[in-house]
Length: 563
Ligand SMILES: Nc1ncnc2c1ncn2[C@@H]1O[C@H](COP(=O)(O)OP(=O)(O)O)[C@@H](O)[C@H]1O
Ligand SMILES: [Mg+2]
Ligand SMILES: [Zn+2]
Image 1 (cartoon, helix red, strand yellow):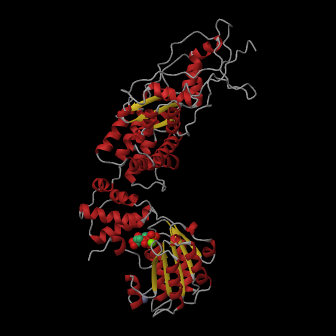
Image 2 (cartoon, rainbow, N blue to C red):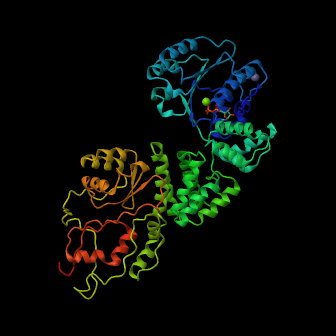
Image 3 (tube, rainbow, N blue to C red):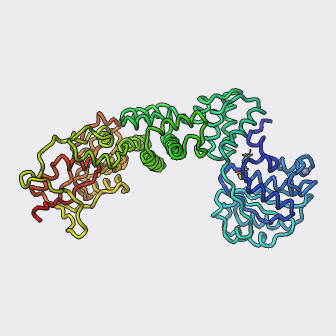
């Protein structure tokens, strides 16, 4: 009968277990000194060797030649335990036996001596699933166990084990297995299975398990079933839905070029190939994270799980970005991943998320930005190029105009300054909701505004759309059929209702293509007091460039000469 690789190659001795050295040493010593505890908690990610280690303890304790840290593997006990059929090794899956009755049964069982072997070993898997009453029923037994009983509670969520139980057990936490050690193990397995493979393929398989040996070995099974005795990286990637660096590099290339169009084309291609936006965004975060780590720790960092060829490529790509850029992209990609978990419109979310990254642009060092401010209007900085390329709304830079105070005074006075704390707050004509925040749920806000404005259909349509604030501009994406319900009028009405009457916004429908999307007029936030000098100050090219570079709004304009 065919046995899956993970089971066929389940370690039968401490030596076979990868990593977890701290656990192996402690347990070996305990067995050698005959200081076996009655209760153990094994916690850690799935597929890292908890059940395996529990079974090895059973082998060590019950081997006819034991207790020993090197079970013989040939005696009746060893053979039965390895096959999972020993009467004195009781495995309980707490996911399905979690109630008080099961624990009472167990308590009864503990009282009787082992049938044949030295110890009775209870391995309780998924122990965090046990109910509270059931834990209480167990408590007494774990507190004063008969000399032959050993409990091993395995769990992925050790914090859910009640303190009363935990304090009576020794706790070991299993770490996720080292990438290179795992690759080494898989290489051995492939050799003994007669399967031909290479480093890159093994790296793909090892990565796919995300630290779980079992998952990586299952992926290996799957790959062999699909590709036969010769594994090929591209084929395996396709099988596992993994994205190679080449695929991911398209994103960074589009980021470098500030090219929204090719970013959207990428999403289109993903959808045509049946790829999942969620999966893609997770891979994207991983990719950007790897770029960032490579940037910080260098090409040879062990923190990046990739084959040598991939690491080289990562280093090359990371070279064209700054650390701050990558940090921002990583944050945005994680936001995107989080949003996608709940999204009804994953495609739009993915599109808007990738466009946001472009709009975040590359940072211009502040010195350069300030230096540029004093000079004549010049070619766009990458940051302003970013916002212009990606948002059709942004107007072309205004032509240079005379100094706003030229008429009033010879030398330009310092103009816009943030309001001093004691100055009177802005008193706009309408209820002004304060500066807009990117953390708000803008879809909900707009919906409520539309309801207030009596726009029921628009509010319904908004429920199917997504909205996010990027660089003080509201980006709204909606399916095509809502074009009529989500017109400019409707959104303006909603914004008015929620106290952001002058917020800039842009709506894209269906196939999102920023070049084709109808430009909405740029809306300048209304200044506080619309007197003449304010108008001139806001119209001044330097002020406009300041706002282009740094975003934000001008709240207050004071003419220093007058005050
Ligand atoms: N540390 C490890 N070293 C070697 N193989 C491991 C390790 N952890 C898991 N495995 C492999 O994964 C399979 C499942 O491991 P298991 O011990 O059941 O994981 P869990 O931590 O979820 O209980 C094992 O049969 C074994 O092949
Ligand atoms: Mg297990
Ligand atoms: Zn034995």
